[in-house]
Length: 167
Image (tube, rainbow, N blue to C red; front, side, top):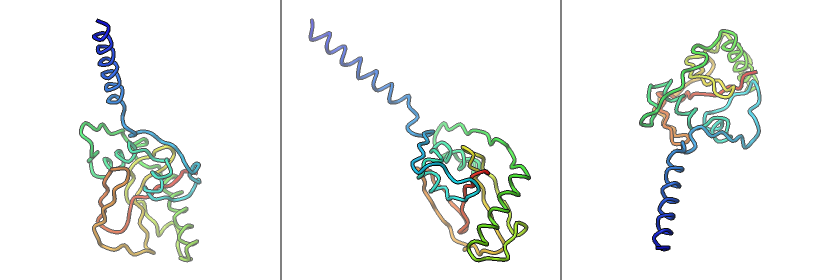
């Protein structure tokens, strides 16, 4: 009789553990900044932002969804962009910061008017995700595949989504 009770308890504990593990969203929305917070006004790659814990897998899924309509996970429910459209002030700040970045890299003629925000994919933890193009750089026409945190991003040229920390 005692053996039967112990077996029932063990089975119940195993079932409880199973449901506890299955109910977790295995790291999708976990952020753990490992190198501090990103610096305001600076640009980062998606890979850098994810590796540093500034973007979660859930954020990457949303970015992928807002770019292609594919969340890459069955049953994925995307979070709407907030704000839905990038404000003119934020867009101008990004262009000015990007032009300053180009000037620091030796392209002295770079100005905000020569920079454009091509697409906006949302703001996550004060990080703005966008495609930026400029008339000072060349972009190779190659298919670029990148997997970050298990989320696949495919680009039609060498220009990638970048992350900008709001000022």
